[in-house]
Each structure stands twice: as C-alpha cells, then as structure tokens.
Image (tube, rainbow, N blue to C red; front, top):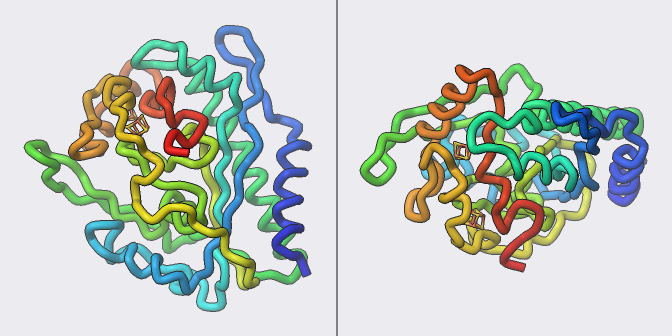
Amino acid sequence: MMMRQDLISLLRTLWQELDDNAVQLPSGRTVPVLGEPLIGFAATDDPLFERYKDPEVIGPDWLSPKEWLPEAKTVVGIFYPYADELREEVRGEGPVVSASADTGFPQAGKCARKITAALMEALSNAGITVLDPGRDPRFKVTNTPVRSGEDESLHFCSAWSQRHALYACGLGTFGIHRHLITEKGCAGTMGSFLIDAAYEPTPRTYTGVYDNCIMCGACVSRCPAHAITLEHCRNLLRCLQHGDEIEKLGGSECGRCMFGVPCESRNPSA
Ligand code: SF4
Ligand code: SF4
C-alpha cells in the first residue's frame, strides 16, 4: 500500500531527479523551469465540491469527484511553481510577446505532466485506482456569454477544474486575475487526479475565495489588454482576444498578470 507520506516523498524525489528541468531561452541563458512542487489532499465527500455545480461558481456541467470515479475517496492536487530563474526572465520582458514564456512554459508543462503521470503510475502499481479527469474522454469545456459590469465577457464551465480542485485541497485561493495564489505564488502550472485510497485531507487555512489576494491592483496595471478590474476580476473575453493578438504576432503565451506582482511567488496575505 502506498501511504500519503510515501506519495509526498515520491513527488519530491521525482522533482529532484528530473533530467529535463531546464530550457535554453532565446536569450541564450539556460534556466530551470520548475521549482519544488506543493501537494494537497481533499476528501471526495467534502461539501465544497457540490457547490462547484452552482452556475455562479463553475456550473452544472462540472462533475463531482464521485461522478468521475464512484469509488474515489481523495482528490490529489499539485502546484508546480515556475523556477525563480524562469520567472525572472519572463518578468523582465515586454508587454506582449515573451520569448522566454513561449519557450519556458511548455517545457515546465511537460515536466509537470511527466511527474504527475509518474505519481499516478506508482499509485496504480500499488493497487490504487487512479483517474485524471482532465485526460478522460468526458472532459469538456463550454463557455457562455455573460455581462461583467458594463462589458461583455465569457463564463467557462469546465467538467473539471484544476484551480478549483487545488482550492479544495488547501493549496490556495483565487486572485482577481483568477489564477490560484498558493504559498509559492500563482506563477506555475498544476496537476490533479482522483484515487480510491483515503488520505488525510490538507487543512484549508482560508474561508474566502479571495483570501490570499490583497487587492493591490498590481495585476490590473500589468495586463496589456486592460482585462482585469478590482471590481469584476479578469474579463475572460478580453483575455482571450488578447491571446489571439499574441498569436498573430507569432507568440503563444501571455500570463503577464502573474509576473511582477506581489503574488507571483508567495502568498502576499501571509
Ligand atoms: S496582483 Fe494583487 S490584486 Fe492582483 S491577484 Fe495578486 S494580490 Fe490580487
Ligand atoms: S493573461 Fe494576459 S491578457 Fe489575460 S488577464 Fe493576464 S495579463 Fe491580461
């Protein structure tokens, strides 16, 4: 049987032993891409999960852990922070196309997926049933037009949400930029999956959806598309439209609201 602490230790080992935790940026500098990950756990019968079906939160298409896997007992969430050196490079780049982000984020995502898959495989080899909703054929995302203050926006309803899974796993709260602010900040990537073993849940040290956001407005100023306001958070339609503009210019990643802000690599409310 693989115990909770065994999984935590294995995560650390897999991260330490990554053989491709590095990328050469267009500047010529080679930097690591992932810092040490954080892991958290939530019980699948946590009442919080039912609230995610509320159209004001995610919506009715969101599937609860037991709808994905009836025998599931625990949700496992992992936050993979971008490495200091990668963040430093991205932070210093211009407001639209970032060559460092376009090169570094995909490599970070690849390393994170590799670690998540290795954890799932180890659990499975130990006789534990594992399911990653994000890679299940039932996974889908729909979006509907909504009003946000005076503006048009979009509401995304996803059958599974990494950010909401990690919120339940005690890893952090949302910021007005809609990224999850963990104890290692918001600049990073995530993984989550379900298991049929009962691991002790991680205590949530917050009660409010935005507890870790200090409402400083720094992400509002950082956004080149003026997509974020203190009153209405991130306007997803504007954010998507800006993504299209970046693609036309040959880039692929924005995420400027995660860099050069107090919540980039720490919890500013701590
Ligand atoms: S930059 Fe400030 S306002 Fe924006 S999400 Fe982070 S803490 Fe909140
Ligand atoms: S990802 Fe870019 S466009 Fe979207 S809110 Fe953040 S800074 Fe603005």
